[in-house]
Image (cartoon, rainbow, N blue to C red; front, side, top):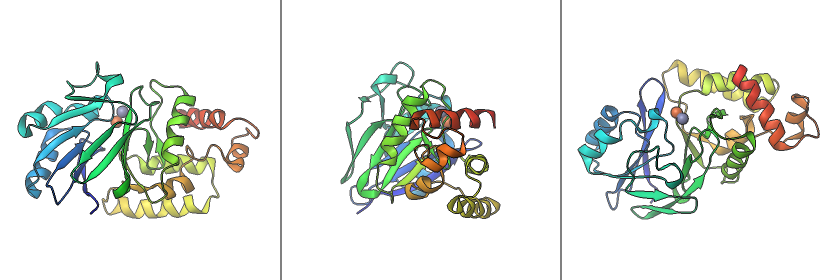
Length: 255
Ligand code: ZN
Ligand code: FE
């Protein structure tokens, strides 16, 4: 049976996620922006939290850890490469490591770029990828620590997952991300359709995450830097994929 998952809005525009294996009762949390909404969701569902999975060290992803760990006794897992900047880890992870939630085995990908040591959690049987501030709905995280080449390599790993993978990212930035995307590919029909459907969702107060990887591949300019029409659109026909990604990222930083 696939994992159940719940999107938990936190802070102003962050998302945390709970995953739950109904058979075993095991529950894990991905990122801890703040304790109250997460503890309330656990209580409402009667789920007992066993594990907190951290994607990266930024405070808007970890600051709820002490309170949630104290309230639930959950163990904390995060990147070994970032252990000095994360809360105390009960288990330190690196790419390729496996995590078990009930009957399902997930694995860790290194998706550095937004920060060095940013990891993603992939649960292939449930088609879930927890990407936080690496691949985001319609965009990607700002490059605070990595080079464009590092982030392009990270996004390429995520792009290789099955198209039906649900990308569970960390923020509600989709509207502005797509507004930017339209400056790169103003005539992409899939992008125009997505802008309309996201506007409808937001007008009803709905979250725009998770999103399907296939939809990201069709509309997210940061995944499309390798396409000839996108290279041409930014005046870089013949440049490398990573160079085109760098140009798109630089434009977004000024957008
Ligand atoms: Zn971040
Ligand atoms: Fe963040």
